[in-house]
Length: 191
Image (cartoon, rainbow, N blue to C red; front, side):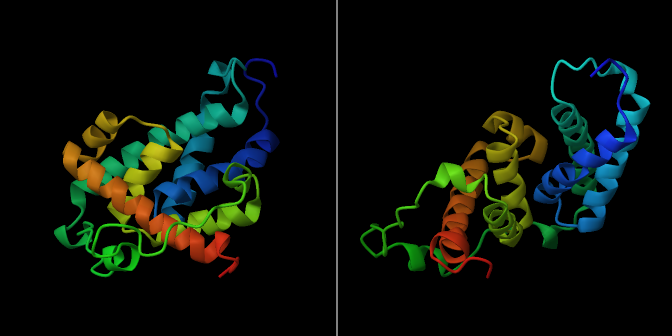
């Protein structure tokens, strides 16, 4: 693709992937739509700066990521105390661990977990599981595991202490494991 030769159709073709990405970060479908729309407008305005050194979708996700970070910063400045994740799920540890600290039921062996992400059905189950997490927990998990940010960057972005970050990640992984075993790996797909 030549420099600055981005068409509206190419942008439209990337839109579903951008929406999926935005929805992992935002709990509000309308806010995700707005972020994607802002991204596409910014891409059209900056089309001449696209040199084709990366895939168009990769370039667009970079723009979207900055838009999401700005939006999350604005939102966190106005969030009420009741919206923060207390992290309490009184039954989670009791469901997953025996009194001696061992697994109550060992994790199931997931068949080909790496290839699961290539399946649209799995992605839908994964996205639903992420959406079921408390907002702050989900945001922390997605920034680390989807965006690949380092812990220090996430702590800075979200105003977390290092210990709070690790607690949120631990809780996210436990809850996602439980949810994915029910929704995907446990044979109850689509529920």
